[in-house]
Every structure is written in structure tokens, then in C-alpha cells.
Length: 129
Image 1 (cartoon, rainbow, N blue to C red):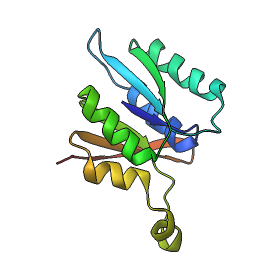
Image 2 (image 1 turned 45 degrees about the vertical axis):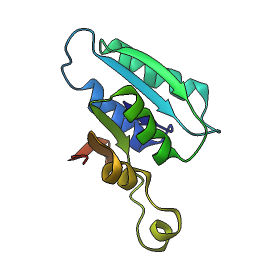
Image 3 (image 1 turned 135 degrees about the horizontal axis):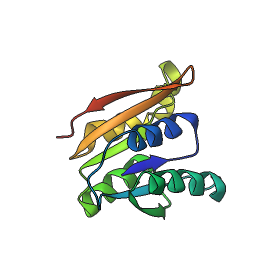
């Protein structure tokens, strides 16, 4: 499952997924929880997942992104969640929290957090409970 909001960091999460070898028939779900996200950005990300050989479903939901991603992963039985991070620190982190941190902390599956840095994606893997 890929959490996607159109940011460069979420593009890095898509990069992390498409850069891997997946068994034939592997399914991916592209989850968006962003009311202002253009359908074009979502369509491009879904196309990239399909070109990597993944059966891809696009899902848009309303609500708190962390809660939506965790709930969708549990309901679907996802093996892993790929998300980006905006690298929020200090007061902004306390005020708004971090979707990637909340997902990594509460998900019951593996979580991979990606960050776009200097044109290259870097990822960190966290294990859910």
C-alpha cells in the first residue's frame, strides 16, 4: 500500500515500490487522503505502479491521513505501507504531528518511510507492532 499526496516525498515512496522486484500478481493500493490533490498526479503515480507490473487500485478517502492509512492497511491485510515524510521538526511537529511517524508507530505491518533528497530517494524501514 502506498500513501500518496503528490509531494516529492510521496513520489519517493512510489520510487521505492517501483524499484523492487515483485512476484507476478502482486497488488498495490494507492491511497490518497488529500482534497486538493490533482487527479493527474495520482494518475501518474498509479501508471508508474502499473508499469512496474503491479495490479494497482486507486482509492481516495476523507479523514485524518494517518488513521485512514492504518485502517485501510488493516482492512486490506497489507503486508507493508510505503509513505513519504515532510521531515517536520520542532513546534510544527508538536502542532501537526507526523503522518509517517503515526503510521510507523501504529501500523500492524511493515512501514517504509521515504524522503526525497537531492534528487535521490532515501528510505527507512520500520516494523509495525
